[in-house]
Image (cartoon, rainbow, N blue to C red; front, side, top):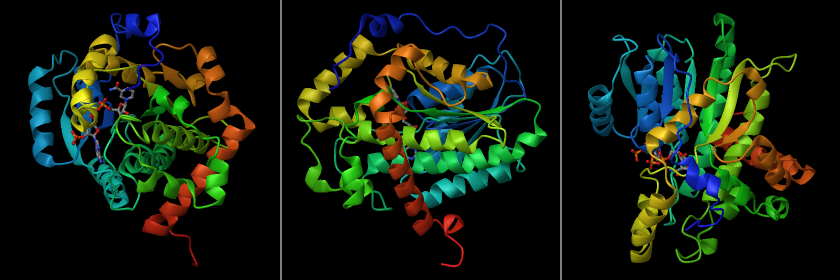
Length: 355
Ligand SMILES: NC(=O)c1ccc[n+]([C@@H]2O[C@H](COP(=O)([O-])OP(=O)(O)OC[C@H]3O[C@@H](n4cnc5c(N)ncnc54)[C@H](OP(=O)(O)O)[C@@H]3O)[C@@H](O)[C@H]2O)c1
């Protein structure tokens, strides 16, 4: 259980919701939210819908999606527009094929016009070791590889469609401050040896729940941040100006279903997980405000990670080793190369020509 860093600002933060502009409206805009069937994604989708947006949420199975869709329609206080809609799109991030089909499906649904906002919220914590059909440990597959793939496919589409827009679209990655706790110091050696992805997907290194109740979570979120850094660069035009505003956000601790796997891992964690969330967790509605807020940021905020209880200056200091130092940038390049090699070997649209 991550009981470190329980600062007064974190505890107080859960009682004071982030204010959003009172006249905020997304009327007529299309907003895509992955992980929209639960927790933060569901609250974010509901908030956008209540602000007038036509929302598309991803779901792993349509029956659950329909249930959630009815809930959003029934619970919402849609005062902004009676024309707002909620649509579903299937996505199972344990495979690359599903991610590619998801984006292709969006293109069809939207007549190839890119969404105004995308919030990539789907993610998981897996205390039990499991490999994805792609052969990688599931936390790494979902939170890092498939999130990077979706980000890459979406940024290219959103960038290409920017000529049809009068204002910039937003792509928001829901990451976590836990990326700061990933120990990447040995990743250059590991990359040269068996590879970072193989290392993180080796059951021999999987810890018992009492040693680490969230194995690979911090590493997966660090890898997602490395992908985020690359995707931010890809969003720039030839004058280094963003054509899509790409943001990364940590909402702080939110009472959601993310702890379900942890609670199931042992009797001790079943008791501790709700207590931890009770002390630190804000409501999912409060958490969703951070995602909505990221989607209205100006282009000066492009590429920035925002966390509820740290100033940018405080975060930058903490992120030096893993992210912004020469070592951090070296690891970023190694991780991105492994990701791209995997995409190129498994996803037909990425396959290098003449090979
Ligand atoms: N809660 C927190 O305190 C906290 C703090 C910082 C960051 N975050 C991040 O916030 C994001 C949302 O988490 P949450 O707290 O809202 O958890 P949650 O309630 O468990 O929701 C997770 C969502 O992701 C979806 N999902 C999980 N695995 C998937 C897969 N293989 N393919 C497609 N969708 C999948 C789930 O779908 P199903 O409904 O089908 O399970 C669900 O909609 C995550 O990225 C998490 O790391 C959470």
